[in-house]
Image (cartoon, rainbow, N blue to C red; front, top):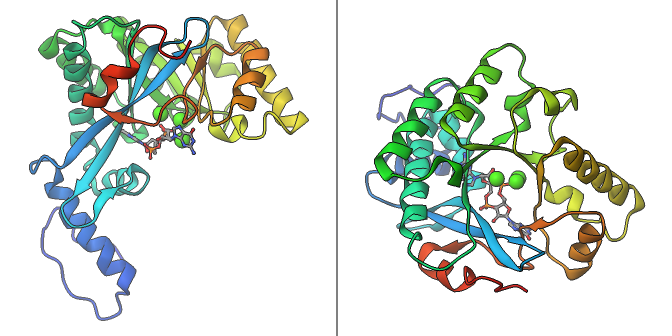
Length: 278
Ligand code: C2E
Ligand code: CA
Ligand code: CA
Ligand code: CA
């Protein structure tokens, strides 16, 4: 059953199970999380294997719930999407990532970009204005901002997604396709859309060192990306075997626990030292 839209009233339903009540509590708390400053961005390094330097960081939102502790974005982002809160939360993430990136300006690094995840529900023409606003208010160089879009956006039919992408490119930011290979992609869109980067999903990286089929798929994605002039980021790299295989297939940018888990901004400085992973 649908719950009462914008109303904050919650009516007790005797049929509601424990999970339902738990979810209601979580929803009520999520509505207040932003104003109570309970959201925080963590950053996961992206390492260029040629230099051993961190060249990018992906911002990953965290919710520090006063009672529950850390709530995973895999839980609360879908909730925020259903509740109509993703616009505000997404905009906060966008702005905060720009603020944090600007704050790193003074230190000696090879860092050239911060990536921000964009929910499919955030992806409409208004996003252009929001990105423009975040850049203007923080003074971040647009080239230092990369937006991670999902395949779902890209395969949507009609001109709207394409127009929005061109609007964003017009601001000078970079566009990346997240979790590549997991959606319903036609390869056709890769050449049609103004993209800069593909991120190979962890599900492909996992097994690349054992399974021939995985390896063949990943090799094809990397070769295709190189031919199309797209940067490739291999995600979820956990072992040196995976790293070695992917390097052999031509991958150069790596993100995963092998190098670093996502870190709060204060802990990022140490890993940003040029050649830190050489
Ligand atoms: P994602 O964008 O695909 O992010 C990668 C996820 O994989 C992150 O989980 C990251 O911590 C995790 N990860 C990184 N390296 C490894 C590894 O080597 N092994 C394994 N097993 N996992 C690894 P996280 O931070 O829990 O985020 C989960 C998802 O929540 C993200 O998947 C993204 O879809 C969403 N999300 C996170 N932050 C945001 C945000 O600010 N906005 C939006 N719209 N979505 C977000
Ligand atoms: Ca992502
Ligand atoms: Ca991903
Ligand atoms: Ca994912």
